[in-house]
Length: 542
Image (spheres, rainbow, N blue to C red):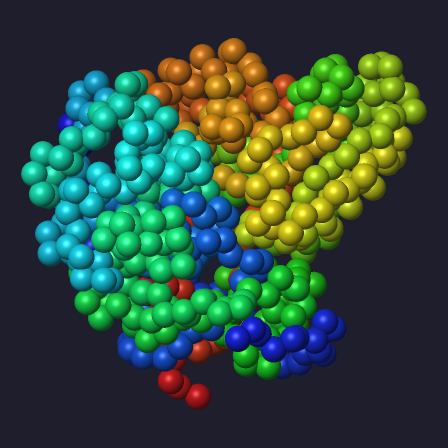
Protein backbone atom coordinates (compact mmCIF):
# COMPACT_ATOMS: atom_id res chain seq x y z
CA UNK A 1 0.00 0.00 0.00
CA UNK A 2 1.28 3.44 -0.79
CA UNK A 3 0.14 6.49 1.08
CA UNK A 4 0.89 10.02 0.02
CA UNK A 5 -0.16 12.94 2.11
CA UNK A 6 -0.14 16.35 0.44
CA UNK A 7 0.57 19.65 2.08
CA UNK A 8 -2.45 21.27 3.81
CA UNK A 9 -2.42 24.04 4.77
CA UNK A 10 10.36 36.66 38.05
CA UNK A 11 8.14 34.78 39.86
CA UNK A 12 4.44 35.42 39.67
CA UNK A 13 2.86 37.71 42.26
CA UNK A 14 1.59 35.53 45.11
CA UNK A 15 -2.08 35.27 44.41
CA UNK A 16 -4.89 35.31 46.92
CA UNK A 17 -6.02 31.84 47.97
CA UNK A 18 -9.65 32.80 48.36
CA UNK A 19 -12.31 33.42 45.73
CA UNK A 20 -13.47 36.95 44.94
CA UNK A 21 -17.19 37.43 44.48
CA UNK A 22 -17.97 37.65 40.80
CA UNK A 23 -20.77 39.45 39.03
CA UNK A 24 -22.07 40.41 35.60
CA UNK A 25 -23.55 38.35 32.81
CA UNK A 26 -22.39 36.89 29.51
CA UNK A 27 -21.77 33.49 28.05
CA UNK A 28 -19.62 32.43 25.11
CA UNK A 29 -18.05 29.36 23.58
CA UNK A 30 -15.07 30.05 21.35
CA UNK A 31 -14.87 27.63 18.43
CA UNK A 32 -13.39 29.29 15.42
CA UNK A 33 -9.90 30.23 14.32
CA UNK A 34 -11.03 33.70 13.18
CA UNK A 35 -13.49 35.92 15.03
CA UNK A 36 -16.41 36.55 12.66
CA UNK A 37 -16.67 40.21 13.57
CA UNK A 38 -12.97 40.98 13.43
CA UNK A 39 -10.06 39.87 11.31
CA UNK A 40 -6.98 38.67 13.21
CA UNK A 41 -4.50 41.36 14.16
CA UNK A 42 -0.78 40.93 14.78
CA UNK A 43 1.07 41.91 17.93
CA UNK A 44 0.43 41.73 21.63
CA UNK A 45 1.25 39.34 24.44
CA UNK A 46 -0.73 36.32 25.63
CA UNK A 47 -0.21 35.43 29.30
CA UNK A 48 -1.21 31.89 30.24
CA UNK A 49 -1.55 30.38 33.73
CA UNK A 50 -0.55 26.71 33.68
CA UNK A 51 -1.85 24.29 36.30
CA UNK A 52 1.50 22.83 37.37
CA UNK A 53 5.23 23.04 36.93
CA UNK A 54 6.67 22.35 33.51
CA UNK A 55 9.45 19.90 32.85
CA UNK A 56 12.80 20.50 31.16
CA UNK A 57 12.42 22.27 27.79
CA UNK A 58 13.77 19.33 25.82
CA UNK A 59 11.17 17.66 23.58
CA UNK A 60 12.87 14.26 23.89
CA UNK A 61 13.09 14.37 27.69
CA UNK A 62 10.03 16.30 28.88
CA UNK A 63 6.96 14.67 30.35
CA UNK A 64 3.41 15.93 30.76
CA UNK A 65 1.00 17.82 28.54
CA UNK A 66 1.57 21.00 30.51
CA UNK A 67 5.19 20.98 29.31
CA UNK A 68 4.19 20.37 25.70
CA UNK A 69 1.82 23.31 25.67
CA UNK A 70 5.07 25.28 25.79
CA UNK A 71 7.30 22.97 23.75
CA UNK A 72 4.76 22.60 20.94
CA UNK A 73 5.18 26.30 20.11
CA UNK A 74 8.97 25.98 19.68
CA UNK A 75 9.47 22.50 18.27
CA UNK A 76 8.02 20.58 15.34
CA UNK A 77 8.14 16.99 14.18
CA UNK A 78 8.01 15.48 10.73
CA UNK A 79 4.24 15.26 11.07
CA UNK A 80 1.71 16.75 13.44
CA UNK A 81 -1.95 16.59 14.36
CA UNK A 82 -4.34 19.09 12.89
CA UNK A 83 -5.24 21.24 15.90
CA UNK A 84 -7.38 23.64 13.90
CA UNK A 85 -10.63 21.64 13.88
CA UNK A 86 -13.18 21.80 16.68
CA UNK A 87 -13.49 18.44 18.43
CA UNK A 88 -12.17 16.57 15.41
CA UNK A 89 -11.81 12.83 15.84
CA UNK A 90 -10.05 10.68 13.28
CA UNK A 91 -6.82 10.26 11.37
CA UNK A 92 -5.96 13.97 11.46
CA UNK A 93 -2.22 13.63 10.81
CA UNK A 94 -0.90 16.37 8.56
CA UNK A 95 2.54 17.33 7.21
CA UNK A 96 4.88 19.43 9.30
CA UNK A 97 8.63 19.32 8.62
CA UNK A 98 7.92 16.50 6.19
CA UNK A 99 5.77 17.64 3.28
CA UNK A 100 4.71 14.09 2.39
CA UNK A 101 5.51 10.44 3.07
CA UNK A 102 5.22 6.99 1.53
CA UNK A 103 4.53 3.66 3.21
CA UNK A 104 5.71 0.35 1.78
CA UNK A 105 3.15 -2.34 1.00
CA UNK A 106 4.25 -4.42 3.99
CA UNK A 107 3.98 -1.47 6.41
CA UNK A 108 7.64 -1.69 7.43
CA UNK A 109 9.32 1.12 5.47
CA UNK A 110 8.37 4.82 5.78
CA UNK A 111 9.98 7.35 3.44
CA UNK A 112 9.60 11.02 4.39
CA UNK A 113 10.04 13.84 1.88
CA UNK A 114 11.26 16.86 3.80
CA UNK A 115 10.44 20.51 3.44
CA UNK A 116 13.07 22.68 1.72
CA UNK A 117 14.25 26.04 3.03
CA UNK A 118 13.46 25.45 6.71
CA UNK A 119 15.89 26.81 9.28
CA UNK A 120 16.20 26.35 13.02
CA UNK A 121 16.00 29.36 15.32
CA UNK A 122 19.82 29.53 15.35
CA UNK A 123 20.00 29.63 11.53
CA UNK A 124 21.07 25.98 11.12
CA UNK A 125 19.48 24.46 7.97
CA UNK A 126 16.96 21.69 8.50
CA UNK A 127 17.66 18.53 6.48
CA UNK A 128 17.66 14.73 6.57
CA UNK A 129 20.92 14.58 8.54
CA UNK A 130 19.33 16.76 11.23
CA UNK A 131 16.42 14.32 11.47
CA UNK A 132 18.72 11.32 11.70
CA UNK A 133 20.86 13.00 14.36
CA UNK A 134 17.76 13.70 16.48
CA UNK A 135 16.21 10.26 16.09
CA UNK A 136 19.48 8.46 16.86
CA UNK A 137 19.60 10.33 20.16
CA UNK A 138 16.40 8.48 21.09
CA UNK A 139 16.93 4.97 19.77
CA UNK A 140 20.49 4.09 18.69
CA UNK A 141 22.58 2.95 21.63
CA UNK A 142 25.92 3.29 19.84
CA UNK A 143 25.22 6.83 18.56
CA UNK A 144 27.54 9.46 20.08
CA UNK A 145 24.60 11.59 21.20
CA UNK A 146 22.44 8.70 22.51
CA UNK A 147 20.48 9.62 25.64
CA UNK A 148 19.11 6.68 27.68
CA UNK A 149 16.37 8.75 29.31
CA UNK A 150 15.20 10.09 25.95
CA UNK A 151 15.21 6.53 24.62
CA UNK A 152 13.15 5.38 27.55
CA UNK A 153 10.55 8.13 27.36
CA UNK A 154 10.11 7.85 23.60
CA UNK A 155 10.35 4.05 23.44
CA UNK A 156 6.73 3.91 22.25
CA UNK A 157 7.76 5.66 19.02
CA UNK A 158 10.86 3.63 18.23
CA UNK A 159 9.83 0.22 19.59
CA UNK A 160 10.09 -1.46 16.16
CA UNK A 161 12.63 0.84 14.46
CA UNK A 162 15.69 -0.99 13.08
CA UNK A 163 17.58 1.58 11.02
CA UNK A 164 17.50 4.98 9.32
CA UNK A 165 18.77 5.77 5.83
CA UNK A 166 19.48 9.27 4.50
CA UNK A 167 18.57 9.01 0.81
CA UNK A 168 19.42 12.61 -0.03
CA UNK A 169 19.37 15.94 1.85
CA UNK A 170 15.55 16.08 1.75
CA UNK A 171 14.64 12.38 1.90
CA UNK A 172 14.90 10.02 4.83
CA UNK A 173 13.81 6.39 5.19
CA UNK A 174 12.89 4.56 8.41
CA UNK A 175 13.00 0.75 8.45
CA UNK A 176 10.97 -1.25 10.98
CA UNK A 177 11.14 -4.85 12.14
CA UNK A 178 7.34 -5.16 12.16
CA UNK A 179 4.49 -3.67 10.18
CA UNK A 180 3.57 -0.44 11.96
CA UNK A 181 0.84 1.20 9.88
CA UNK A 182 -0.07 3.58 12.69
CA UNK A 183 3.47 4.98 12.92
CA UNK A 184 2.72 8.46 11.45
CA UNK A 185 -0.12 8.85 13.94
CA UNK A 186 2.15 7.74 16.79
CA UNK A 187 4.94 10.06 15.61
CA UNK A 188 2.51 12.98 15.82
CA UNK A 189 1.80 12.34 19.53
CA UNK A 190 3.42 14.33 22.31
CA UNK A 191 3.18 14.16 26.07
CA UNK A 192 5.87 11.80 27.40
CA UNK A 193 8.78 12.48 25.08
CA UNK A 194 8.21 13.34 21.43
CA UNK A 195 9.79 13.26 18.00
CA UNK A 196 10.35 17.03 17.97
CA UNK A 197 13.42 18.07 15.98
CA UNK A 198 16.17 20.05 17.78
CA UNK A 199 18.89 22.04 16.03
CA UNK A 200 21.79 19.58 15.65
CA UNK A 201 24.26 22.45 16.02
CA UNK A 202 22.66 23.37 19.36
CA UNK A 203 22.66 19.74 20.48
CA UNK A 204 26.36 19.46 19.69
CA UNK A 205 27.05 22.69 21.61
CA UNK A 206 24.88 22.11 24.66
CA UNK A 207 24.46 18.33 24.73
CA UNK A 208 21.94 17.17 27.30
CA UNK A 209 21.73 20.72 28.71
CA UNK A 210 19.78 21.68 25.56
CA UNK A 211 16.66 22.09 27.71
CA UNK A 212 18.18 25.31 29.02
CA UNK A 213 18.82 26.54 25.46
CA UNK A 214 15.85 25.22 23.42
CA UNK A 215 16.20 25.72 19.67
CA UNK A 216 13.65 24.30 17.25
CA UNK A 217 11.93 25.36 14.03
CA UNK A 218 8.53 26.40 15.42
CA UNK A 219 6.52 29.62 15.11
CA UNK A 220 7.79 30.84 18.49
CA UNK A 221 11.32 30.81 19.91
CA UNK A 222 12.70 30.81 23.42
CA UNK A 223 13.50 34.10 25.14
CA UNK A 224 13.98 33.22 28.79
CA UNK A 225 12.98 31.03 31.71
CA UNK A 226 13.01 32.68 35.10
CA UNK A 227 11.49 31.22 38.22
CA UNK A 228 7.96 30.14 37.41
CA UNK A 229 7.67 31.86 34.03
CA UNK A 230 8.72 30.95 30.51
CA UNK A 231 8.69 33.60 27.80
CA UNK A 232 8.55 32.88 24.07
CA UNK A 233 8.69 35.40 21.23
CA UNK A 234 7.52 35.30 17.64
CA UNK A 235 9.79 33.61 15.10
CA UNK A 236 9.77 36.12 12.25
CA UNK A 237 11.69 33.67 10.04
CA UNK A 238 9.20 30.83 10.43
CA UNK A 239 8.81 28.73 7.26
CA UNK A 240 5.00 28.65 7.40
CA UNK A 241 2.24 31.08 8.31
CA UNK A 242 3.59 33.43 10.93
CA UNK A 243 2.12 33.70 14.41
CA UNK A 244 -0.08 36.68 15.25
CA UNK A 245 1.26 37.15 18.79
CA UNK A 246 4.54 38.89 19.51
CA UNK A 247 5.02 37.09 22.80
CA UNK A 248 3.64 34.32 25.02
CA UNK A 249 4.25 34.27 28.76
CA UNK A 250 3.60 30.93 30.47
CA UNK A 251 3.20 31.16 34.27
CA UNK A 252 3.22 28.08 36.50
CA UNK A 253 0.36 28.54 38.97
CA UNK A 254 -0.49 25.22 40.68
CA UNK A 255 -3.11 26.70 43.02
CA UNK A 256 -6.46 26.72 41.16
CA UNK A 257 -7.91 29.68 43.07
CA UNK A 258 -4.77 31.69 42.44
CA UNK A 259 -5.31 31.09 38.72
CA UNK A 260 -8.86 32.39 39.01
CA UNK A 261 -7.71 35.48 40.91
CA UNK A 262 -5.02 36.12 38.30
CA UNK A 263 -7.62 36.00 35.53
CA UNK A 264 -10.01 38.29 37.40
CA UNK A 265 -7.34 40.88 38.07
CA UNK A 266 -5.98 40.83 34.53
CA UNK A 267 -2.60 39.35 35.38
CA UNK A 268 -3.26 36.53 32.92
CA UNK A 269 -5.44 36.12 29.85
CA UNK A 270 -6.13 32.39 30.00
CA UNK A 271 -6.18 29.71 32.71
CA UNK A 272 -6.16 25.94 32.52
CA UNK A 273 -8.19 23.73 34.89
CA UNK A 274 -10.43 26.33 36.53
CA UNK A 275 -12.05 25.13 39.76
CA UNK A 276 -15.38 23.69 38.54
CA UNK A 277 -17.41 25.70 41.06
CA UNK A 278 -15.93 28.93 39.70
CA UNK A 279 -16.94 28.46 36.07
CA UNK A 280 -20.52 29.76 36.19
CA UNK A 281 -19.51 32.97 37.94
CA UNK A 282 -16.57 33.49 35.63
CA UNK A 283 -18.85 33.18 32.62
CA UNK A 284 -21.31 35.63 34.18
CA UNK A 285 -18.41 38.04 34.61
CA UNK A 286 -17.77 37.90 30.86
CA UNK A 287 -14.97 35.35 30.65
CA UNK A 288 -15.18 32.64 28.01
CA UNK A 289 -15.35 28.91 28.64
CA UNK A 290 -14.15 26.37 26.11
CA UNK A 291 -14.19 22.63 26.66
CA UNK A 292 -14.92 19.62 24.50
CA UNK A 293 -13.94 16.13 23.45
CA UNK A 294 -10.39 15.11 24.32
CA UNK A 295 -8.45 11.88 24.05
CA UNK A 296 -8.07 11.67 27.82
CA UNK A 297 -8.87 9.20 30.58
CA UNK A 298 -8.24 9.48 34.34
CA UNK A 299 -7.71 5.88 35.48
CA UNK A 300 -6.56 3.59 38.25
CA UNK A 301 -4.21 0.61 37.90
CA UNK A 302 -4.15 -2.16 40.51
CA UNK A 303 -0.83 -3.74 41.44
CA UNK A 304 -0.74 -7.18 39.78
CA UNK A 305 1.88 -8.26 42.34
CA UNK A 306 -0.33 -7.64 45.38
CA UNK A 307 -1.99 -10.89 46.60
CA UNK A 308 -5.24 -9.21 47.57
CA UNK A 309 -5.94 -8.28 43.93
CA UNK A 310 -5.34 -11.73 42.45
CA UNK A 311 -9.02 -12.55 42.84
CA UNK A 312 -10.98 -10.90 40.03
CA UNK A 313 -13.94 -10.48 42.37
CA UNK A 314 -11.90 -8.05 44.48
CA UNK A 315 -10.91 -6.04 41.43
CA UNK A 316 -14.45 -5.90 40.09
CA UNK A 317 -15.78 -4.98 43.52
CA UNK A 318 -13.50 -1.94 43.53
CA UNK A 319 -14.58 -0.96 40.02
CA UNK A 320 -18.28 -1.32 40.86
CA UNK A 321 -18.02 0.60 44.15
CA UNK A 322 -16.82 3.85 42.58
CA UNK A 323 -19.60 6.29 41.76
CA UNK A 324 -18.28 7.93 38.60
CA UNK A 325 -21.52 9.83 38.00
CA UNK A 326 -21.15 11.54 41.36
CA UNK A 327 -17.51 12.39 40.66
CA UNK A 328 -18.59 13.98 37.37
CA UNK A 329 -21.39 15.85 39.12
CA UNK A 330 -19.06 17.12 41.85
CA UNK A 331 -16.78 18.42 39.11
CA UNK A 332 -19.74 20.28 37.56
CA UNK A 333 -19.66 18.11 34.43
CA UNK A 334 -16.25 19.32 33.35
CA UNK A 335 -15.66 15.57 33.03
CA UNK A 336 -17.77 12.63 31.92
CA UNK A 337 -17.83 9.12 33.45
CA UNK A 338 -15.36 6.86 31.65
CA UNK A 339 -16.34 3.37 30.56
CA UNK A 340 -13.16 2.23 28.82
CA UNK A 341 -9.51 3.22 28.64
CA UNK A 342 -9.90 4.43 25.07
CA UNK A 343 -11.34 7.91 25.32
CA UNK A 344 -13.54 10.16 23.19
CA UNK A 345 -11.38 11.67 20.47
CA UNK A 346 -9.98 8.23 19.68
CA UNK A 347 -11.29 6.28 16.67
CA UNK A 348 -11.62 3.07 18.69
CA UNK A 349 -13.82 4.75 21.31
CA UNK A 350 -17.28 3.19 21.48
CA UNK A 351 -19.87 5.65 22.83
CA UNK A 352 -22.33 2.81 23.41
CA UNK A 353 -20.03 0.62 25.49
CA UNK A 354 -20.82 0.26 29.20
CA UNK A 355 -18.12 -1.22 31.41
CA UNK A 356 -18.48 -2.41 35.01
CA UNK A 357 -21.43 -0.36 36.18
CA UNK A 358 -21.78 1.25 39.61
CA UNK A 359 -23.40 -1.28 41.94
CA UNK A 360 -22.22 -0.97 45.56
CA UNK A 361 -24.42 -3.80 46.84
CA UNK A 362 -23.04 -6.27 44.34
CA UNK A 363 -19.55 -4.95 45.12
CA UNK A 364 -20.04 -5.88 48.79
CA UNK A 365 -21.20 -9.36 47.79
CA UNK A 366 -18.20 -9.88 45.52
CA UNK A 367 -15.77 -8.75 48.20
CA UNK A 368 -17.33 -11.04 50.81
CA UNK A 369 -17.31 -13.98 48.40
CA UNK A 370 -13.61 -13.37 47.77
CA UNK A 371 -12.92 -13.66 51.50
CA UNK A 372 -12.76 -9.99 52.46
CA UNK A 373 -16.13 -9.22 54.11
CA UNK A 374 -14.47 -6.58 56.32
CA UNK A 375 -12.30 -5.16 53.56
CA UNK A 376 -8.56 -4.47 53.79
CA UNK A 377 -6.03 -1.63 53.78
CA UNK A 378 -4.24 -0.33 50.69
CA UNK A 379 -2.32 2.67 49.33
CA UNK A 380 -3.33 4.86 46.38
CA UNK A 381 -0.69 7.10 44.80
CA UNK A 382 -1.52 10.27 42.87
CA UNK A 383 -0.29 13.82 42.30
CA UNK A 384 -1.48 17.11 43.75
CA UNK A 385 -1.92 18.68 40.31
CA UNK A 386 -0.76 18.23 36.72
CA UNK A 387 -1.84 18.43 33.12
CA UNK A 388 -4.90 16.26 32.59
CA UNK A 389 -4.96 15.38 36.29
CA UNK A 390 -8.05 17.58 36.77
CA UNK A 391 -8.33 17.84 40.60
CA UNK A 392 -6.54 14.59 41.49
CA UNK A 393 -6.72 14.80 45.29
CA UNK A 394 -10.44 15.58 45.23
CA UNK A 395 -11.12 12.64 42.90
CA UNK A 396 -8.91 10.36 45.00
CA UNK A 397 -10.84 11.35 48.13
CA UNK A 398 -14.14 10.56 46.40
CA UNK A 399 -12.75 7.12 45.55
CA UNK A 400 -11.46 6.74 49.11
CA UNK A 401 -14.97 7.52 50.44
CA UNK A 402 -16.67 5.02 48.11
CA UNK A 403 -14.24 2.21 48.93
CA UNK A 404 -14.49 2.91 52.67
CA UNK A 405 -18.12 1.79 52.40
CA UNK A 406 -16.78 -1.68 51.52
CA UNK A 407 -14.35 -1.62 54.43
CA UNK A 408 -11.42 -0.89 52.11
CA UNK A 409 -9.28 1.72 53.85
CA UNK A 410 -7.36 3.74 51.28
CA UNK A 411 -4.32 5.75 52.31
CA UNK A 412 -3.68 8.47 49.70
CA UNK A 413 -0.03 9.31 48.96
CA UNK A 414 0.52 12.51 46.95
CA UNK A 415 3.43 13.97 45.01
CA UNK A 416 4.17 17.15 43.09
CA UNK A 417 3.36 16.54 39.41
CA UNK A 418 6.81 16.27 37.81
CA UNK A 419 8.04 14.10 40.69
CA UNK A 420 4.96 11.92 40.37
CA UNK A 421 5.63 11.27 36.71
CA UNK A 422 9.06 9.99 37.74
CA UNK A 423 7.45 7.70 40.32
CA UNK A 424 4.81 6.43 37.91
CA UNK A 425 7.13 5.63 34.98
CA UNK A 426 9.24 3.44 37.27
CA UNK A 427 6.29 1.15 37.86
CA UNK A 428 4.11 0.47 40.87
CA UNK A 429 6.19 -0.61 43.85
CA UNK A 430 5.61 -3.43 46.37
CA UNK A 431 3.23 -2.39 49.12
CA UNK A 432 1.43 0.14 46.91
CA UNK A 433 -1.98 -1.18 45.91
CA UNK A 434 -3.14 1.34 43.34
CA UNK A 435 -1.55 4.01 41.18
CA UNK A 436 -3.35 6.65 39.16
CA UNK A 437 -2.61 8.41 35.93
CA UNK A 438 -4.37 10.54 33.35
CA UNK A 439 -3.38 10.12 29.76
CA UNK A 440 -4.63 9.12 26.34
CA UNK A 441 -3.88 9.68 22.68
CA UNK A 442 -5.82 10.03 19.47
CA UNK A 443 -3.58 7.15 18.31
CA UNK A 444 -5.24 3.81 19.05
CA UNK A 445 -1.76 2.42 19.68
CA UNK A 446 -1.74 4.18 23.06
CA UNK A 447 -3.73 1.30 24.57
CA UNK A 448 -0.90 -1.17 24.06
CA UNK A 449 1.60 1.32 25.44
CA UNK A 450 0.00 0.99 28.89
CA UNK A 451 -1.24 -2.61 28.83
CA UNK A 452 0.94 -4.76 26.54
CA UNK A 453 2.90 -7.35 28.55
CA UNK A 454 6.27 -6.37 27.03
CA UNK A 455 5.73 -2.64 27.61
CA UNK A 456 6.58 -2.69 31.31
CA UNK A 457 9.07 -0.36 33.02
CA UNK A 458 11.79 0.61 32.46
CA UNK A 459 11.08 0.49 28.72
CA UNK A 460 7.34 1.04 28.67
CA UNK A 461 4.31 2.46 30.47
CA UNK A 462 2.52 -0.67 31.67
CA UNK A 463 2.97 0.58 35.24
CA UNK A 464 1.17 -2.29 37.01
CA UNK A 465 2.79 -5.08 34.94
CA UNK A 466 -0.50 -6.26 33.44
CA UNK A 467 -0.21 -9.45 31.37
CA UNK A 468 -3.00 -10.91 29.25
CA UNK A 469 -1.93 -13.06 26.31
CA UNK A 470 -5.32 -12.69 24.59
CA UNK A 471 -4.95 -8.92 24.67
CA UNK A 472 -1.38 -9.14 23.34
CA UNK A 473 -2.60 -11.30 20.45
CA UNK A 474 -5.12 -8.63 19.48
CA UNK A 475 -2.38 -6.01 19.57
CA UNK A 476 -0.25 -8.16 17.27
CA UNK A 477 -3.08 -8.26 14.75
CA UNK A 478 -3.66 -4.50 15.04
CA UNK A 479 -0.01 -3.72 14.30
CA UNK A 480 -0.24 -5.62 11.02
CA UNK A 481 -3.67 -4.34 9.97
CA UNK A 482 -3.41 -1.75 7.15
CA UNK A 483 -7.09 -0.80 7.24
CA UNK A 484 -7.65 1.97 9.82
CA UNK A 485 -11.28 1.05 10.55
CA UNK A 486 -10.47 -2.63 11.10
CA UNK A 487 -7.54 -1.62 13.27
CA UNK A 488 -9.81 0.55 15.42
CA UNK A 489 -12.21 -2.37 15.91
CA UNK A 490 -9.35 -4.56 17.13
CA UNK A 491 -8.32 -1.96 19.69
CA UNK A 492 -11.95 -1.64 20.78
CA UNK A 493 -12.07 -5.39 21.36
CA UNK A 494 -8.85 -5.24 23.40
CA UNK A 495 -10.18 -2.34 25.48
CA UNK A 496 -13.28 -4.28 26.48
CA UNK A 497 -11.21 -7.30 27.53
CA UNK A 498 -8.96 -5.07 29.64
CA UNK A 499 -11.88 -3.35 31.39
CA UNK A 500 -13.53 -6.71 32.07
CA UNK A 501 -10.25 -7.93 33.62
CA UNK A 502 -10.49 -4.99 36.06
CA UNK A 503 -6.76 -4.52 36.58
CA UNK A 504 -7.37 -1.05 35.14
CA UNK A 505 -10.36 1.05 36.20
CA UNK A 506 -11.31 4.04 34.03
CA UNK A 507 -12.81 6.83 36.13
CA UNK A 508 -13.53 9.96 34.08
CA UNK A 509 -12.83 11.57 30.71
CA UNK A 510 -11.69 15.17 30.94
CA UNK A 511 -13.50 17.81 28.88
CA UNK A 512 -10.38 19.96 29.40
CA UNK A 513 -12.07 23.23 30.39
CA UNK A 514 -10.16 26.45 30.13
CA UNK A 515 -11.29 30.02 30.78
CA UNK A 516 -10.03 33.07 28.95
CA UNK A 517 -10.50 36.77 28.59
CA UNK A 518 -12.86 37.80 25.78
CA UNK A 519 -9.94 39.61 24.15
CA UNK A 520 -8.33 36.22 23.38
CA UNK A 521 -9.35 35.17 19.88
CA UNK A 522 -8.63 32.26 17.61
CA UNK A 523 -8.04 29.54 20.21
CA UNK A 524 -9.24 26.16 18.99
CA UNK A 525 -10.15 23.46 21.50
CA UNK A 526 -8.74 20.40 19.76
CA UNK A 527 -8.98 16.71 20.70
CA UNK A 528 -5.52 16.79 22.27
CA UNK A 529 -4.64 18.67 25.45
CA UNK A 530 -2.09 20.88 23.75
CA UNK A 531 -2.80 23.81 21.46
CA UNK A 532 -1.60 25.72 18.44
CA UNK A 533 -1.01 29.24 19.76
CA UNK A 534 0.11 30.33 16.30
CA UNK A 535 -3.59 30.78 15.59
CA UNK A 536 -4.28 32.99 18.61
CA UNK A 537 -4.54 36.76 18.52
CA UNK A 538 -5.42 39.54 20.93
CA UNK A 539 -8.34 41.80 20.14
CA UNK A 540 -7.69 45.55 20.46
CA UNK A 541 -11.38 46.35 20.78
CA UNK A 542 -12.62 47.67 24.11
